[in-house]
Image (cartoon, rainbow, N blue to C red; front, top):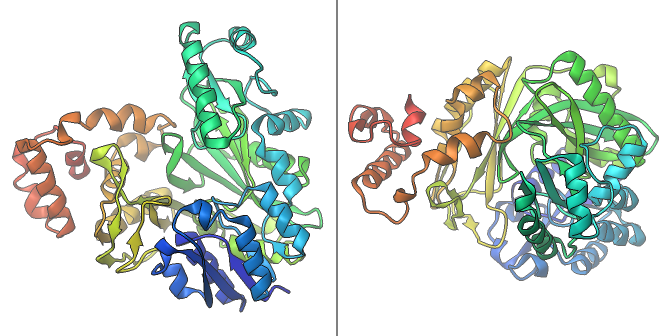
Length: 497
């Protein structure tokens, strides 16, 4: 039995894991950097230890320090959360070698699925559909051009060792190839210390669908249905839902069976996610496997009633899954909005500072997973996500209505947030009817943000600032009656239509 868990992470996910530990009567141990000494997860954990200086490579990415601390304090297990070292097979192997339990998959499975080309090769061998393209890194530009011509434009170049949109370039003709090829390799080298890239056919107007799976160490597997993750910016998810409005029962059966098949192919155990692209004809293709807990796991928890973090811990202890596939049902609909400290009108630049007001929203069907409280610092060193707002409803329409209410009530001051962006998205016809794809924000939102707003003292900017102030003061009704000077020129104005 696990009695003490060191949480090798920070922010909202560390706080989330602490809650699971408390319910299981397990001692939770937080680690923190200089920048996080006043963080919520540090205050809420049973024990907390300084791990290093503010830069991540000196603290949350320092493998040796984390493992040495775990041994020193007698931790039975390490939970990596997501990000940082969660998919680092070298770190996982180091943990395994100490005899400490790693709450996640084996290092072997992570290594197998971590390389995108290796994963594609494995999936192809196991009859999991993959996007047409190469299963080996391309060796040179001459071969690459030849392969691209055979596949047919448009194509996309991707970093073999990466994700999150880094080292990725869309190419629509051979004229663009050389420059895009060089940029993709350079970026892959910069972010992943590996310049290998591969080619995929570019699927236009796709949906990004993912399937949550759980596997234990006894060979049992279940899926927890699918999530809709197509609202993205720069290949990073912004809103997630469960289930997907675009997936019918027949498609659901196919993609969930495929997800289990993919997990079995790498002898996977613990929580994992199979990510897929689905075209307009509901053909779907393996994209990648995330060998960890996902940011968006709460929407799955809300529609199934299953605590995924608790189940991760039980699996790590060697216990069989506590339920069978037949016992898992979809109940209602859930939506998650990722609240970031970022300035939408300044090219989504991170916003730093101290939280001086944090007024939580609540009410039926609302859940907040947060990493902040009043007086929390928002440093520049880490991902700027502050919290996640999750709304559940008996159906999608109710979930949307509840999310709109929750966002109108949620207040964070001290940093700029992206809450107003979600208000805009939730009022778009494409979102309401589910016809959006992964290009939605790029095609519909970004053209509405005029460059002249940035570094401008124009009357329009003054009116926009006044609008934001009105929202923060809950005076939106007064603003509505006097918004004539804004007309229909701003994306913020559309929030109120």
